[in-house]
Length: 547
Image 1 (tube, rainbow, N blue to C red):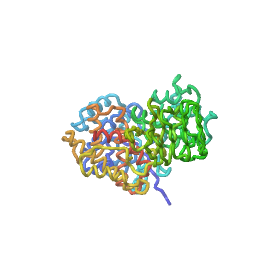
Image 2: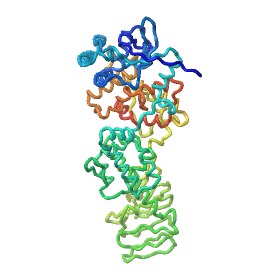
Image 3: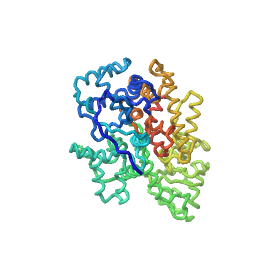
Image 4: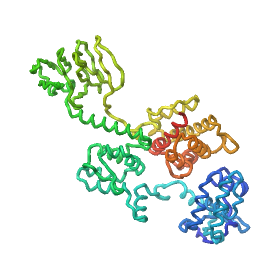
């Protein structure tokens, strides 16, 4: 199979035409319209690109791809952003009048640039349309199983910065240190570098999280205060197995909730090692009162303590503290999970713990004994049996699920007060569709949901004007909402960063281009993990749109 030999040539900026059929926007007819569309799509990004060109020149590793158009002109097929920036540097008056700040920026850059750049633009010329399309496709549609550009992950980027800037990355240095520790399993050590930099930095950048995990920062390095504790091991397991999404630890309150979750999980592991009175009556020791009472295993025997308290675990399903005895659980290890059974309160009333995961503990109320009946589904409720209060409180949950392991795009814990009937229905459908089985349907519906949410927000907040309306591109709408939220102090600049990446990045999971490709590009297939990560990244933004 023969391939056409490319021709390399230096061309002037005035000989190059911005492609009016650029996929970044709808087709245009004239160059002025094409440049206007590019400015509308890219805005300040063109200024950043132009400034980099002024300071560093054109990228010699990435030539402009052009196709002959006759009359000594060439249409740019790859590199249209760069050529648009150069045309605006050459003639700032080409910047549309409705972007006065951009025009001023290009005028300032025009006075700083070397005009030789505009006269000698390195280009590669191809005439074969199939070959042109193949190279453009490969450039803009991701990794393509390794045939396209394979970007660096956070760890690889950190290594590059360390090589270039000579400054060690805190995360890489800490992970290197952990790999030398004997407290970690070999399996965990091999997975440490799978930890996402964004998740690691968000957790370890929180001083409360560091303190809880037994870490401190000394000379820009993470240090262990007193060895590796169980909570740090749990966090490392979560991070290496991708059980933590950005949405789960995005805000300070989210990280506090995660710390409490770690405590509950540690408590479950502790109580799982105990044998409880209802599940293994033949071997389990019963509740140990604070009076030093000895409690006999469930063999049918009774042990009478020195205080006269009777504890009669006849079958392992019933515990009857004698009236007036004081029974106080001494540690959280004495919280005993129960599968089913009966607990008799101080008045003789029976409380049945029929649900797996419920558990009972006696507490000392000064006058007699009350049984505390814990049920995970009835947090905060209080009930009474024969006038004896029975407190129903929240206990540790077993089988905790993580957002990344959910079967739907939208976790059930995500709630919105949506006032529009159809948008609400779509939101609920995204909570029901199995994303593993139907990733394409989930992706298209996700994109639709984002668009309709944006439409509702700009309408309700009066953002529709001459530049923005419901027919504008999703990127334009998102940019307008982002600016509005920043101006109104609804979200901070830092909180809006993942949203700005939606319109600026070509490869982020939540980018507009990725959403667009899910709908319009037959060769781009969404994955459940990518979609769930994208949802978790934009969830704080979605929540604010409806708050």
